[in-house]
Image 1 (cartoon, rainbow over the protein chains, first blue to last red):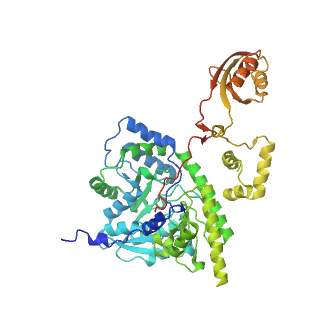
Image 2: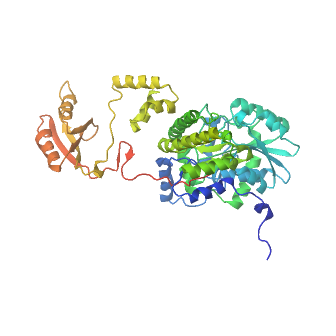
Length: 392
Length: 160
């Protein structure tokens, strides 16, 4: 019998998260600091709007690009938050989560041989999606001493004459790093000079704790060469609704819509109605959740300081990324031992790229009570490792 | 800072002050000072505990009583409200807009005790025109907290 599988697909590494997930699942009573989704329920008024849409029988396909009403709300939001103007008819597409937007943006923009720059540590899907799109992923290893921000120099060093796209994943999962305006300006300069395009994944934009989130699209000349990706999962605690969107130049959105039309048809209708409500009346919910995350973030940083675990101050998303290099173990060894000895699951930094070696992703999408218990166990574990080291 | 302190302690008055300072990114001394000031100004009126008495063996009966009264010249509703709220069994008294004037929340040990309070004490007050007593059958949510069931974390343990 012929081999039924595609070599290209078989060649893609399974997610490093998946591997750890299986280990954790065998441990029945483990507690976790490993999730990448909010602990809050979707605010009730948003859920209620979804329910109401079902009651009214809004159970049909929407247009391929998504409900016009929702695209209009997204454009209002972009104007309000970033002071950029998008045309709801031609420059916005509603997708099945930010994930689909990443996939179709890449597929719409690259040809075989084109290089896509992917800063890492970062979300697990950029590299495989680039491969699936027939492009060549080129990894930029971000550094702890830069607080895992992308510098213009790092960008320059990785550009070849085949480079076409830079993926810009900030606020960042797993590091919590952000890019401030000055950082983005330096990047934009190189992008313009080298005539590149940007896919800016801003799914965590509402979870910025320093100043207001800045997007590269608001810098001069950048809107016309950027696909901005965002969604409802993180800001409104709507992960299971599977709803995201992309805004960008008409010509690119048009081609993305073509892929979306053939592969997906349209994003879930119920979710789209709920999302309209989220954008219209959800600002207070977002502010409440952001404040909660920020409190937990301060709590964790303080706890790390007390236990002597080095960690730069992350200003975004809901992750901290402490360094465990001093213990002479790989991230995976550390995470596995911590799980076995203290029954707490954290994700090894290497799940997000080789440059995550020596770091752990710790999520604070948990109540303070849960965090306190888990961090107490981490402190105990770290103290024990330090003790072992002294006795050696 | 006051608003943030209040939002937190409204949900958890037992929070350690050191921890409160950490999560708000403030000095502990500043938090202590602010809380003392709010106590003195009567903004913080107490540190109560939310109890679901139904889960204990102790019998309690709660009632909400709508009261229509005649306001007094120069005093409005304040005098009559005071005469009512001074009873220790009265939990809360609110002046209400709409079909009646005062809403009285009452807690007693038995149905009989509550009825006796309404017929002997409340109804006999001069300014009280009428009362309508509603007994609480079940508390689903109180002080912003759902009493019925404890939420469980249904998320997968590890997600990207």
